[in-house]
Image 1 (cartoon, rainbow, N blue to C red):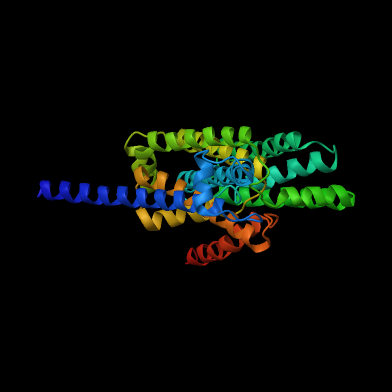
Image 2 (cartoon, rainbow, N blue to C red):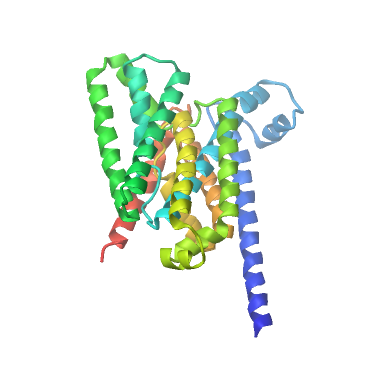
Length: 337
């Protein structure tokens, strides 16, 4: 009987590994196909030649200077937001948890609007201010939850309240600004994976890889916490320390993604739920699958946004909101008794 259980376990594990490899391969194919779409169409043969530096023409310049940075940004940003959402949902044991519902994205938007409208800052300082705004929102959540003893459910409600507060402050700044600064602030708030450079993409990629490794190291702790706080404490896990350490690290990654690319809503909400339906709740497989799904989702949304106008000026955040809003409403209705 024990041998049968072990064989069944390894059979399911191999099946999940094959599924992960299939998703990873599909994302890689999507990335190659996405390189060919845009104002300047490129045949797949020329894409492959450009990737391997077999040609040195206009197609190669477009691929390496325009398309590849955009695709790399989509992959790193999508993975980062998905992993951040997964950590938040697991640590707070709430399916509605995400960087948006905790106020992280709205804090970044407020910071960016401040330096754009008040100080007329450059894009570099705009990213710094957005990162600071996101961290400020995170610190408020940590202080309210850690030191004021809020329950995980109350932390989510506090995040919603902070989201409303930062959103109102951002609107107030926009009302008081001139037309030029208003347009710049609004344009920043629309998520765009085409605004980052290779240095920013590298920073975010390192942070995402670090969060991925942390998810692997904490895989058994996250599995235990997913069953409930009491079972996790029984196993000797310091739930409070795990919760707040994980939330801070996840918020840092989400803050970087938002600072470099603007507000991209619902990726951190959709990807973890889709991964759970596909692979189950075991974080050994859930962490990598959520990361790949987040990358594929944002890459697909950006490719669709470029196909709408052909110039890449259609905000990818609008596409992800159209995809995520129905799911968010579904989760809200599903949670009703």
